[in-house]
Image (cartoon, rainbow, N blue to C red; front, side, top):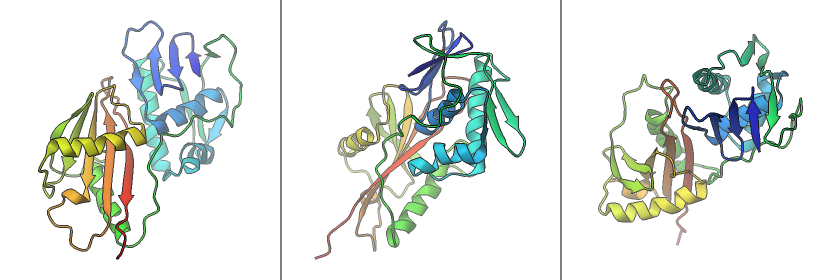
Length: 258
């Protein structure tokens, strides 16, 4: 579904992008979570949405970890995008309550006014390979999550982990994390990454960096029976001052005990 905001901005909910009607600025690609949050705001134009409502419908219902800090970061990104499009006051913060999208007019692409309140029909979540970790694998995933913060734009106070590019898949640059990886054949590793990208529905038709972690490439794998692959997809920002949000996916292949 497409929404025309104030007769000059087009929000493509189905394509997870937002652009100006006159094409003077390149479209901005949105991650699945960012698209969900913006969709909730746009569909409920001029209505106050509580923080709990946004966290529940933007994160919790899709198995994502939610926090008020995450919500603040996403609202900040949406504000930056609209500010770049000349709509600096379109999101109103109600202290201790929530946020309100305050466009003068929101229409669907066929010209019909959007509903004043839509709590259902939320955009579909980005596909993610899900798994409920336990035991040693939990620790490994936690360690990987710590490594991945270097790709996360809001944690620039950490020292970056070393990584190197092993190749490209369409417009995605694939990089391995940490110096503990041993990559013997980069082409083989890229072939392993491709199905993971397809399963997670990451868009490599736009410039992006994919950070890749695979326990099979570790120099030391002592005590690890399961093969774990972890991807962080970070699309390139198209607007100055607007940082793209990364999306993560992982796959665990359990080794059968003989």
